[in-house]
Amino acid sequence: MSSGDVSVTIEGGIARLVLSNPERRNAISSAMWRALSEFAAEAGRRGDVRVTLIRGEGTLAFSGGADISDFSAARSDASGAQTYDELVEAACAAIEGLGCPVVALVRGACVGAGAALAAACDIRVAAEDAFLAVPAARLGLGYDPRGVARLVRAYGPHAARQLFFTAERLTARRVYELGGIDHIAGLDEVDALADRIIARIAENAPLTLRAAKLSIHAAEGVGGGILTEARHLTQLANASSDYREGRLAFAEKRAPRFAGN
Image (cartoon, rainbow, N blue to C red; front, side, top):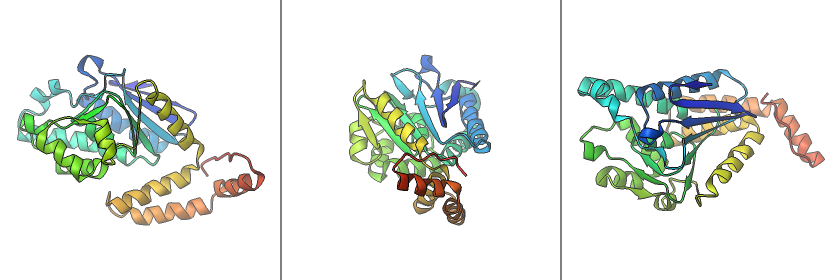
């Protein structure tokens, strides 16, 4: 299925989202932000999505940022800027709040809104040629504090300061050294690496993954009241047939077959 310029495929428990706006280096339009929110809502209603991968079309860019062609109409003044920020925040929060782990595959440019979307993901896998940049200070725009907080959580305060204060590029290697990128690989190897990671995640027990993700978010201060929900999900996992299957598979020295219940 597809919606706007975000294509979505779901197979074998893996959802793959592709940001597709190659003429603008996969810049994210208003329609694409809405499509991301719609995907998150749909995935939350489904029981077959165990892990999500987000990438840009091609190899030149994860995303070159927000589609500036939107700005003259949607972000022309303070009121419009607030409305647009709400649209972006809603999409990033929806991706961040997905019950399953979300992996960003970053190739080439990951700029502005692209860096924000990658920050909403749980794991970032980057090619050696990738780079991050947040050019807000060169555009003179005020960056939503919720988005700033998300970038700090994802990339760390040192990287966030450099990104915001200098508005210059940070190489994937440097962000990896600072802890904001989890895996880095050569141009010919990064796709296969990302595929191995999401395949391994998809094999694991969904209830355990969901409970762990909520617990991690609670530890990071994301959301309100989610620790109670994390405890509830932990109890559900401990009472699940998947837990029984995991113990049986371990005893029988075979791979477990988790059903998500």
